Image (tube, rainbow over all chains, first blue to last red; front, side, top):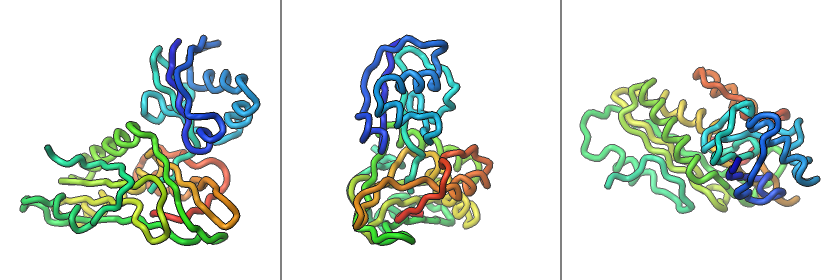
Length: 85
Length: 169
């Protein structure tokens, strides 16, 4: 499936801003599965997206649970906990 | 064209001008509560020489707009404005303005506090502090999640570990 990946803040600094990707979901198209697949892409990804790290996800610009399903064409963003205000 | 009620900008804002625009020529508003967040020049540990704010364009505006709609439903908010600055800010500068108009003070106070608590835990902004030892990203605070949950909002933004921070509310 085709997705647009985005990273912000500390994740953007180590992994870049993201961009279009073509991903074959395995086993299922969830944000958690995508995060696990991204970890296999480089040592930097493995570290930044490690299971113990506080990483939040937004799907199509709305905060989402990692178990939420992804649709083809979705925009998926990974970022640290937010600190605005 | 009406001015949008959610604005993300690098430029500073003038609170008086914004409040006058929020009220306009309406005479049904009885109270306006405002919150202004400022950059502090130090945390418990360090002096802060600057704060740099990043955000997620598009999602930020959508998220805050949804929060205002929620505040309207809960508190009878009549009008609201949220301005959040991004980019590099210096100690003493304004970061954020939340202004809420309602018929009476209680609704205005509550709506304003609700919007700030919601924003701190659900709006995609990130702060980086410049300290004598270098730059570092600010950690999210568990206390902000607790403040959000008082309103019945699902909030699990902060990771493990208490953060420190040098700005805003």
